[in-house]
Amino acid sequence: MEQEQSGVITKDKALYKVAELATEKYDVQVDELVFLSEETNILYKLKDHLGYTYVMKIFQEESSSLEDNLTEIFFMDIVNKANYVSAPRMISGKDGEKLQVIKSKYTSTPKRVALYSWLEGDDLEGNESEKRFIQLGELTARLHKTTYGIQIPSKITPKTWDKVFYYQGEEAIYKHEKYQKFLSKEYHQIMDGIIPFLNDQLSTYYKNNNEDLQLIHGDLNPSNIKVNGEQMHLIDFEDSMFGLPIHDISIMLYYYKYEETQNFDEVKRFYFQGYRKVRDLPNITDYELELFMTARRVNFLNYILEVSNDPVDFIETSLPRVKEFVEKYNINLLK
Image (tube, rainbow, N blue to C red; front, side, top):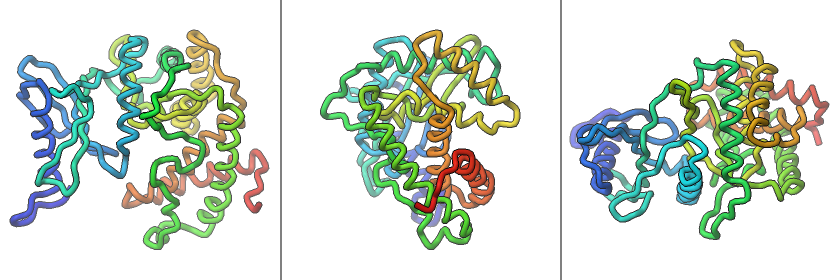
C-alpha cells in the first residue's frame, strides 16, 4: 500500500472509506469492518450487531470487468438456488441489487462492490487426503451438473477460455521493455512459439466441442476450496466463464502436477473417482489435460510480470515445465 503523505489520503485509507460507504448500501448494522487481504481484489471482513460475518469485495478494474461481475452474480444465483454445492451467498443491497457502485471523493473512478456470506473453513492446501480429493471430485461434478444446460441471458456476456490471454484487455506484456531485465532469449523463443500453438489448439477444441459449453468456475484452486470438518465449500466465483468442464478439472490438477508432497497420479485418480460418483467424466486424454494446464502456466508466465516485483523464481521453475510439454509431444514451435 502507498505511504501516507501530508494532506494526501493513502490508498488503503481511501479504499477503507469506500468500504465504509458501501456498508450503508446494505441492511446490515456493522459492528466491525477490518481489512482482510489484497489479492486480485480488496477484501474486508465485516461483522454485524447480531454476530453474523460477511466478506466485502471491492473489485479492481484491472482484475475484473462489469461483464465478469454480472456473470458471477448470475452463476452464484444458480448455485445458491440449486443448493447442490456449498458456496457463499451474495447479499442484496437495500435497492435489491447485488452489485453496488460507490462514487466518492476517495477514488478517481467509481468502485464496484459486493457483499458475501462468510463460510468458515481452512484452505484445502495443507489439508489434502485421499478422502478430500474424492470429495473435491464430487464437488466439481456437482457444480458442473448444476450449470449444465443453463441458458445464459443475452445481457450476460461471460468470457471464454479459447485463447491463452482470455481476460478483457489482457495482452502479451512480456513484450514490454520494462520487463526485459527479468527475461532471457529462451523465454521469448518459447513464449513466441507456444502462444500461437496454444491459441490454435484451444480455439479448435472450442469449435469441436461447442455443444458441451456451459458455465464453469474458471479458477478452481486449493485456495478457493475451504474445508471445515466434513464439509467442503467452494468460494470465489469471480472468474466464472462459459467454457468446458475440462477447464475446471485441468486448473485444479495444475496445482498438483508438480507438488512434491503429493503423488500426482494418485491425486488425479482420487479426483476422477469422486467426479464419477456424480456424473460421467468428460473424455480427457493426457495430452488434452496437459494442454490446458500448459495454457494456464503460459498465461501465468506473462501475468507474473504484472503482479510480482521479483518474478524470476516463478519463471525459472515454470519455463522448463512448458519445455517439457513441448518436448513430450514433439511440438514444433518454429511454424
